[in-house]
Structure formats: structure tokens, C-alpha cells
Image (cartoon, rainbow, N blue to C red):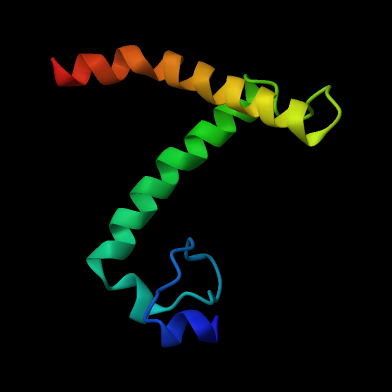
Length: 91
């Protein structure tokens, strides 16, 4: 963490608002933090879809190559599912 601070990199993790959080107002006051959290939500939605619908919660495969292939396949399927919504927004 200290190495990142010396390089002027801020952590973009979610702030715990229900109790004391390690991420304080010095980090959350910047506009980049809010943008980072919006992007993080989109990424978490994709991983959540891949776990629940894409079968990646417990892949029935052995080996990193096969699991990697299954992950790539699930990510491509998620992109295909989201494609009509993205195209509708551009037209």
C-alpha cells in the first residue's frame, strides 16, 4: 500500500459505509473515485452473471487451460447477451 502511495496511486476499493472503513474521505472526495466505482459495478455485474448463469461458480472441469477456456466462453456469452441492449442505446 505504501508503494502505491509513493507512486501517487489511489486505491479504488469500495468504502464500507456501515462501519469504520479503511478508505477515508481523502480518497472518496476525488471525482475519479466515483467514476471508478461506476466502472467497478459494471465489472462486478459481469462476474456475477458468469457465476450464476454462466456456470463459473463451480466449473466441472479440471486444469487451468480448460477452466480458462470455460471462462472465456462464459465472458463471450455475457457479451452476446448484453449486445442488444448496447446496440439499442447507440441507435
